[in-house]
Length: 70
Image 1 (cartoon, rainbow, N blue to C red):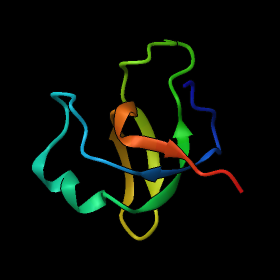
Image 2: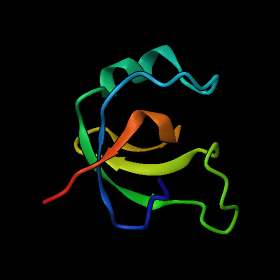
Image 3: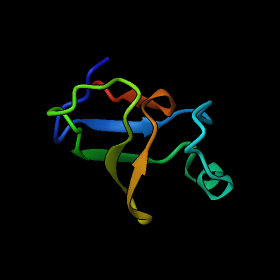
Image 4: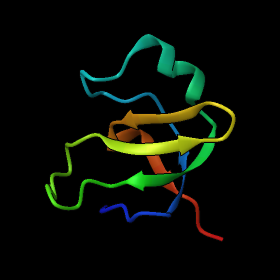
């Protein structure tokens, strides 16, 4: 799935990506929105910037994210 800027997402699971850090386990279940999807790179393995509610903005692997459909 390709994420778009402004898209609402949820950190649904722990990532298998090597960029996943232990502190990110606390993000599982949180909601936020994509602030920088790196669409110019267009790499599904690239980290994307997500602003999480009450946790600030972080670069996360895409395999841990799910789109929130309203």
